[in-house]
Amino acid sequence: MKKVLLLGASGSIGSQTLDIIKKYPEEFELVGFSVGKNIEKAKEIISSFKEVKNVYITSKTNANELKHQYKNIRVFSGKSGLNKLIHQTDFDQCVDALVGFVGLEPAVEVLKKNKILCLANKEALVAGGTLINKLLDEGKGKLYPIDSEHVALAKCLSKCDIKDVKSLIITASGGALRNVEISELSKQTPEDALRHPTWKMGAKITIDCATMMNKGFEIIEAYYLYHFPLNKIRVQMHDESLIHSAVELNDGTLIVDYGKPDMHEPIRWAMFEGKSDYKVYFVKALDEFKDCHFHDYDYKRYPCTEIAKQALLEGASKMIALNAANETAVNRFLNHEIGFLDIAKFVGKKVEKQKLIRQPSLSQIKRIDKNARKVN
Image (cartoon, rainbow, N blue to C red; front, side, top):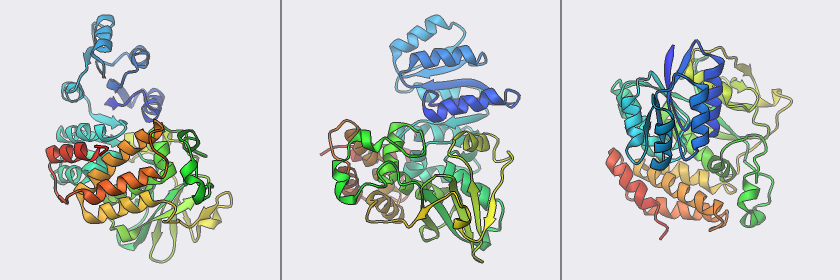
């Protein structure tokens, strides 16, 4: 049985991870978790999972309340509390379901402890891919992605010889605004952009879907996870989100991961370290799937994806600035401070201004991240 530490337990991925732990009680045991400010969610989890011994919650006031109510549980809070949770919890596997840059340092610490990291946090690889890969190359820990696209790629790649692979195909729904005329995009509100047609996710990633920055991030993730160059990673627009990704072989054959848009399966795959049962399909063309519709990727419609691709080509510090600027811009858009098209403009300027550093340390990554968040 694996002892599981869950970071970001109150979010969408966190909640679905709890579903998996409940479904497989002989395989997994929740021994610790983190939440943001949601004290009621923390109490609910503690009540449902009796093995929990360690909890992190942002607010010290909330932490004191939990300490008073649950005498047998260690409760952490504050700036250093998340690291203390990681280092003082006895766990085998960590699910990092944190949202944003905050997920990077915990991912690094988990690997340094030589533990299994199930990573749902895109930003960790975007901002810290060089650092994470360095740790993995040194034999520190194991990493399994949770993103549906990257789990799909892992499944497909397991069914072929790498030398036979022509390209990796990452599918994209296009988000809530995919059918809006380009001339009308400047008028779109956060409420418009949050209406994703096929997935139910948190606000930040849903906006990233609308701008397709998430696809830029996923290209960067695929580069770090599977070590394919940018010219062998391409995007395929797909309306229904039933095909999560595909691998194209040199002979034209496509290996495809097909299934309903539900994150439980990718989470299960990662937590079972890729050893769970799964099925892929070998086809000659994507249109063999009659219930699916496909379109060509339009780079003019999605400048955020192109900015991300260029950042990958240039180097690590550019991707750190990309992530930080995007988080800032998305938050400003959600708060009605800037328009939808301003997201790409803000990010593009920050990435362009960022000085190139190819192998930044964690302290340098934090400094670059902080500077790229500045609005001026």
